[in-house]
Image (cartoon, rainbow, N blue to C red; front, side):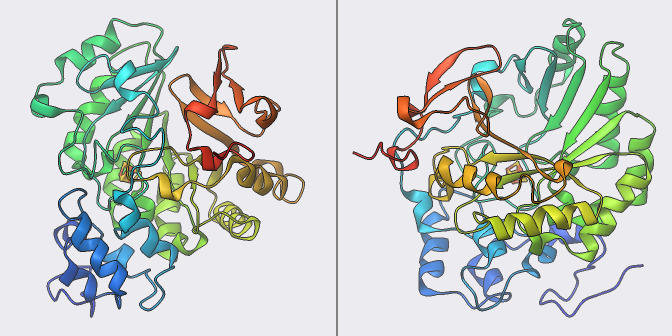
Length: 376
Ligand code: SF4
């Protein structure tokens, strides 16, 4: 049922995801209608405007605390002056998407699976996005001049690699696309016999739960096995609307898993993480990864230490059921590195090993401030 809210935009239809997108908050004036901005926030919005796009759905803005600048929803979606500070070793692409990019959209990093960058658009631009360069950076996008290129080369790559059994649609947010465009992509993948599973990475259950319509779920259900990975970072995001969106997916047989990013000042405490993980279990969403925040240009200020992440893991294991505990990992060009295993040793310069036994030193990969005992 569609209802019109008392939100500032009078024509906004709250339950309509397209209307939510049409009424995204993209300006200082728009933000002022939802929160009482501090002078520092006002300055940050102005200073970041030419560098990184601002976009917040009215739904997500409605979760903001009007008066608290440390509100976790505000911190994730509103510009901060620290975004303009370049930290040591930061990179536009610390995870190596560009190294493994085989076509305009296909990134083939692991043996049996690929990701497809189906878009560079998102309903809300997370300030901590790993692909900040591809998504909200006003100058960026991996697509470049090839933004409107056809998909033949992308599908041909997957067709010609029979070892690919798992395809993850990501971006940007794949659910930003219409059902019709999404179905065109998924049905085409389903024609490739060796593609066994299709996964979708989407923050829509968090930012835009209205997007998880019965029609979308019914369409996806035709192409099982479909999995959905989402990205809740704070218990405040687990609302009745988000729970209903996840429930719709689950009732159509789509498993929903969660990938949390460890974010300084947002969820870097045992108490908050436990509340998040138990909250997810209550809505039947399985915690999957806890990512150490990537050292992305414009994002580094969200990073805490690996030791803090390990302290949080120590506060989870044994204190909650095993499947509530995510895997704590750092994404690198070598792949995902488990940080809760004995592989990481600060004593020998932050040396880590990947799943193939390849070694690297985090000393040259992360800001010195994030490795204890390694400060200059
Ligand atoms: S929804 Fe995902 S891709 Fe989009 S800005 Fe957030 S983290 Fe990046």
